[in-house]
Structure formats: structure tokens, C-alpha cells
Amino acid sequence: MTIKYTSKLSQEYIEQLEKLLYFNAQQRKVINGIESSIEKYGLPKISISDNTLIITLDKIDYPQSLYALNENDELIGLVIFFRESLENIVILHIAIAEDFSLSNTKLYSLAINLIEELKNKAKNIKGITTLSIYYKKDNLGKIKIK
Image (cartoon, rainbow, N blue to C red; front, side, top):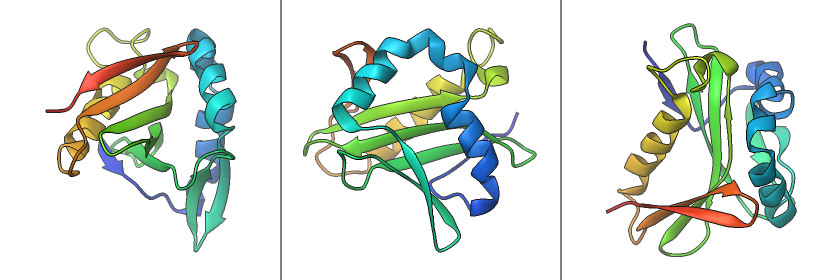
């Protein structure tokens, strides 16, 4: 399976992004982490600028997104993150299409691959040594970069 990663999506993906981000049945499995992230950083909102979809949060300036597309150019996953400090990137939200979650396949986890892709990109950012992710309410897990 070929997965393409991109940091930009055109507005033609608006319905797919809304479905993945707001109407995703997978969210119930990690609801405590999602609620904690929303409480601390704000609810993700989708807007359009120059034909490009942008995800914003009320309490964060300039969060970034990494999107995953399958071989048919369908949106199948995303990770929203921001540089919290000189050393750390915080993963605020991960959304995965159900067909690509661990519960549906033992062979492939898009969530793990998205984190690995972000980790590889973070290796090229001066000073970054860790990725943090909410996986339980008010509990950050840390992943070493280097």
C-alpha cells in the first residue's frame, strides 16, 4: 500500500477532512486524551485560505498538520501538532480512517506511521529532541527523537 504524506490539502478535501476530524467513530477509543487536548489547546476548526484547508485552534498560534492520502488520493489520516518549546513538539490530535486503524488490521497502523513520519521530519528541526502525545487525560507520553 502506498501512502502519501503532505502538509497541505486543497479545499476539495473539505468533506473528507470534516468526516475524519469531527465524525470519526475511532475517537471514542481515546476520548479522554482528546478532551484533555481540547481543554488545553482548543477545538480544531477547519478554514480555507487560498484554496488550502487550514486547521486552527483557539489557544495555539499556527498549529501544523500532516495528512495521509492513500493511492486513490483519499484522505485517510492526519496529525495536528505544534512546537511547544525549543525541544518538544506536541501532537494535539490524530485522526485515522477506520479501515486503517489497529482494530481493523493487525498488519498496518496508520497512526504509528504518521507518528514515525512526523518523528522523521522532526529530526531535521534544530533543537527538537522529543515528541509528546496525549494518550490519557492530562498525561503526556514522550517519544525521543534523537
